[in-house]
Structures are given as C-alpha cells and as structure tokens.
Length: 397
Image (cartoon, rainbow, N blue to C red; front, side, top):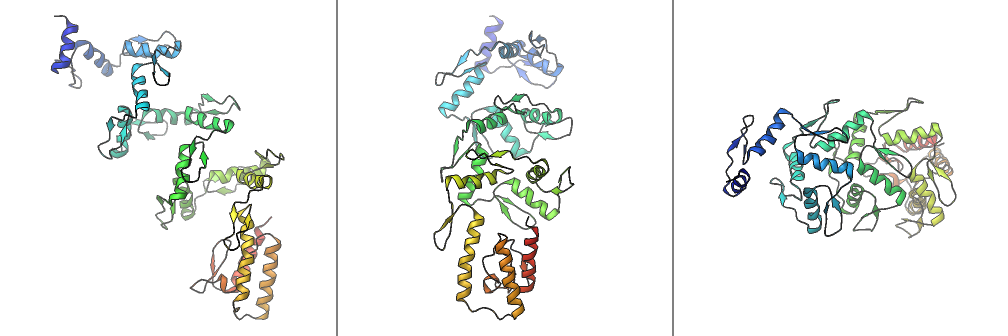
C-alpha cells in the first residue's frame, strides 16, 4: 500500500502516528509533520521570484504569487466575485447563505469564519498577543497591529484618486471616498437619515432609543458615545492636552484645537455651493445653507412657529417667557434693581443673547436659587445673576 493511500485512510481511522518532538503535536503523514516542524525552526525554503518573500510551504507561495500575477481562479457562482484561494471563496459564500457555523461559547455570537471567532474570543479572555515593538501597545489580531505600526512609520499606502489624500488603512480610504461620491449606505430605521459609516449610524440610533451606555464615574452623567465621555472626564481632571502652537491656548478636544487654529491660518474649508461663502466649521455651513433651502427644523412648543437655528428659537422663547412673567405678580424689588434688570435685559437683547425671562420667579428653582438660562449656573441673588449675565456679554465678539 502506498504512503499516500495510507495517509488518506488515516483520515477515517483518526490515526496520527507522527509526533512533533517540540510541541508533542501529532500528524497523519510524514509530510504534514515536516511542514509543521518549519514553524519551530523558522525555515522558509520557498522564495517568491517577484518580491523575494519566503514561505514555509509551497502551497502558500503559490497563493502569494497570485498577488503579482493577478490570478483569481476561484469564482463565486452567486455574484461572480473572484478569489486567489479556495478558502477565501468558501468564506465569501457564507455571506450569501447567511451561514455562521462558528459560535462563541461565552456570548453565543456567531461568525462565518473560524479566525473571526478566535479574535472575538479574545474580547472575553483579554488576550492581546500582538505587541508593538515601538510603544509596547498590544492588540488582539495581527491586522490591528499592522495598522498601528503605520502610526510610528508614517506609512500611508492608500491614496485617494480624487484629492490625493493618503490613509494607513484601506477601510479608511473607502470611507473617505464616500465624501466625494456622496454615498451614504447606512440608513436609520427611525428617521431615514443616512450615514457613510456604520459606527455613526449606531451612535445616531441611540438618539431614538435613548441609550447612553457610557457613564462618568465622577458624576454619573451618561453619554451616547465613548468619545464624548472621554472629553467630559477632562472637565473633572482639568486636562487640556491639545495646545495651540501659535498662542499656547489649550483645549480638551483635538477638534476644538483644529477649529481654533483656523483663526490663525484664516482657513475656511467649508464652502457653500449656492453662494460660495466659506466657513471654518461644518456646523456653521449647515446653518448657513438653511438660508437657501429655507429649512426651519426648530419648532416652538408654544405657538408652532419654526426657525432655522436653535439660537433663533431660544430668542423667540423669550417672548413667551416674558408673557408668562407679566401674567404673574412680580417679586418685590428696589427701584435700582429694577432699572439694572431692564438695562441688563436691553444689553443682552442687543448683543444677540436675549434671555427668556426677566429676573423674576421664572428664573428661580425650588431652592430659591437663580439660574442662568445660558449656562445653567446657579446663583444666590438677583444681583449676582445680573452681574453673571454681564460676564457672558463681555465674552461676545
């Protein structure tokens, strides 16, 4: 009986007579053992002719060479997509069938690839076997380590054809390209709003569900996304790690620093398509575009009047608050306090931060504290509240 036939028969019998002396692992055939031993010895006798990369198995070399030749002999019958190796085709076919045969024992989550399951299981056991040599940061899978190492090397091999911007991950390039194409494939089930990233959709849907899974340990305040929690925690620690090189001003968020730096550079990258006016922030452009579209998405709860911005709605709310305050009997005040209140109210109105009520009962809470409608700070007297409003006025340009 030939060695090949004997090896095939051992598949049925389960016999594995060939033992590795390094790790005590068993194999059905001598060739299988020989290939395995190369893992321990580090021997890679099969060299690529195109890039001189070496491999410990001839089959793996053959698959690798298809990267250079472009050969993809394994074709999906469902969508015609082609692959370099049979294993990749088999995994891809599960996308069409929906088959997920690999199940996690910890949380019963299922996967269509064994490798994906193995990586997922490290979430539960905390294992991070892939360690960066530069900063000792560890990762659950080799691909994440590879992406991370590009932070140190500065390598950005994926280039956008539209604007020549470069990225260190193919997925990041794909997401970026949607800015040019306008593609937003991820749609909200609740309001039909669309997004160019699944992660942004997940965060948005929490607006509808009310879910805020990220909780501050200092004050128990909850947030929809972990980034917001991280920024919030810096309020407690006082940390402002992002420093402006021009004026040494510091910020809690990199985004705030980026916006601030545009004050020095004069950069206004967000341009209106209708009138070509430019803005420093995307939010400012969005607000401006409502002038052209006449969109008024901010609705008053008292009279159903609509406005193009939250600021205009707040100003309008002051009309209703003043109407309510006139209906109520005002608190007893000295003449001087009344005059300063009127003066303060006129100043705030002229500068665009009209508060929704005069300094009367509307501004009081149950503990007889005066609350600033702009920042919600609590003050103990009318006089302190009036001075506090002047601080807001002083900050205006």
